[in-house]
Amino acid sequence: MPDAPPVEARGLVKRYGDVTAVDGVDLTVEPGDVYGYLGPNGAGKTTVLRMLLGLIRPTAGEVRLFGSDPLLDGARALDGVAGFVEAPRFYPYLTGQKNLELLAALDGGDAAARIPEVLDLVELTARRRHRVGGYSHGMRQRLGVAAALLRDPRLLLLDEPATGLDPAGMRDMRALVARLSLAGTTVLLSSHLLAEVEELCNRVAIVRTGRIVFEGALADLKRTAGAGWRLRSTDDARALEVCRAQRGISAVHAEPLELRFEATEEAAAQLSVALVEAGIAIRTLAPHAATLEDLFFRLTEDAPQPAGAPAAREPEAA
Ligand SMILES: Nc1ncnc2c1ncn2[C@@H]1O[C@H](COP(=O)(O)OP(=O)(O)OP(=O)(O)O)[C@@H](O)[C@H]1O
Ligand SMILES: [Mg+2]
Image (cartoon, rainbow, N blue to C red; front, side, top):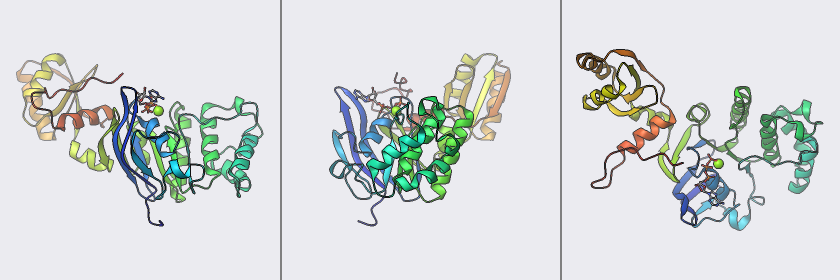
């Protein structure tokens, strides 16, 4: 099947007892995509990646990677697919180089010959003779990518590759993913950071409690979401009421120190008049870049509500 997409998942479900970790996920990743699987803690990101890699069996649904079922063919046997879930694991008392040599021996083929090249790609050549136990978290993550690259993958599956890294480590990891994509690798990565996905990915699935609530180009979502605003006032509780009553103001919600909503510039200007008429002084009224929380709020607000249910935000899963 030469034209089968890198990833195709249909109706994926994974249940653990009464917890539904993944709840009917459909996913298609096309060649050349850097696809972001974006969601908060517990959304089922790792569980989906485990199923894609054939590490666990779905309760229902199916996965195809380049047309093959990873459970039947085994992720290791799957030509051109590599990645890791949660943190990559290495022998801490061996060097980076030695760890890669062991993995290359398992992979076979020309994996061993690729070691210098992949070390270079992840910028670990200078530290290759050092023990992994002394590596920083960022270096270990990069070594994890290097290990995946030994297989010369056409598809790379990465579970939160930049999480837990400091700003410089995050920047390095993002630059690495961008380089791999430029070199022609298709990437599916999970993340809980909107900004990261925005920077790296051309397509995104936004997930919450196991379900995809949006799938497509992030730019489309942001376009439909309209312009975000933040408001600080002398009386946020009353300002909230004014916002809710005001035409042209939507997706209103309270953050700890401010209110957020969506509006055109004109509607925001009218809101400022209404606030003053209500005797509320404005400390700040300014546009702001949407956060993952804002997008969730927008997506759940717009979702059709069951009859009789209040159109309220679901409580955040712990
Ligand atoms: N092996 C397991 N046994 C029982 N429950 C599990 C198991 N694996 C995952 N879960 C549950 O499934 C849900 C999704 O977990 P998962 O680890 O996939 O989320 P995640 O999006 O990767 O979260 P995080 O951002 O914290 O990594 C959680 O409620 C979790 O407790
Ligand atoms: Mg996870």
